[in-house]
Length: 100
Image (cartoon, rainbow, N blue to C red):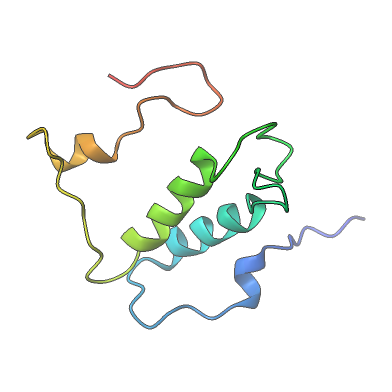
């Protein structure tokens, strides 16, 4: 019978002291680990073909890790919209749907 265990990079690292949401931080860490840039500066993940620079998944994973920490700096939108709107992606990755 195959093993039900998974190999997640976040299982091999300790949490920073200021993490208030361990699940969110570990999820962000795992996604960020899977979307590192290769030598040519493109995302090395097969789900992001020809994505130059940090792909949307990597940027959102890094944001999740920041938000999971106490005293995280929350950006205030310059256009006066609410902070929840500022965190919503303009496009939901992989779905073709656009956020309202």
